[in-house]
Structure formats: C-alpha cells, structure tokens
Image (tube, rainbow, N blue to C red):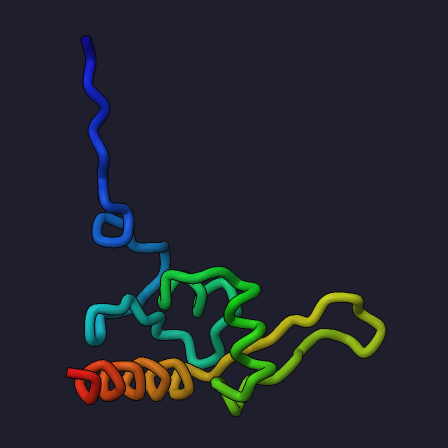
Length: 97
C-alpha cells in the first residue's frame, strides 16, 4: 500500500515570481504598491480577509484604484503598511508571552 505524505504548506510554500525578501518569517514583495492578493500571500490569508482588514483600518494608506462604477474594489496597499502590520503583529506576539 502507498502511504500519503502530508506536507505543511505554510512552511513549504514556493515563493511567487517577482522580487521580494523574507522579513520576520514573512515573504514581502519589493513592490511599493501591493495588490490585495500579494498581501494575502505574504500574510498567508485570503484576499477577503485583507479587504476586511483594510475596511477596519489595519492598512491605513490603502487606496482603491478601481473606478467609481466598478462593482469590485481594487486596492493597492503600500509596502510600508505591510511592514508596519508585520512589526505590530510581532510586537503583539512578544507581549503575550
């Protein structure tokens, strides 16, 4: 019988195309204005979760680059907001210990 091999994809994810670097264990793109999908990849979460966080003010400098008549929002999130979010998360985790 063949046994299935389980891989923890949160640790073994392949890096996406394009430049970036690992910062505090997160893959962060070099792009100054990142898409919701890119930030979702960085934080290992869904695009909808990132949109919810934008609407809650977690990424204060995110802007909607979609047209006023578009049914779907198209946000761009500054790299600095992503780095600040990661730093805040790291500090929060350190304070819980």
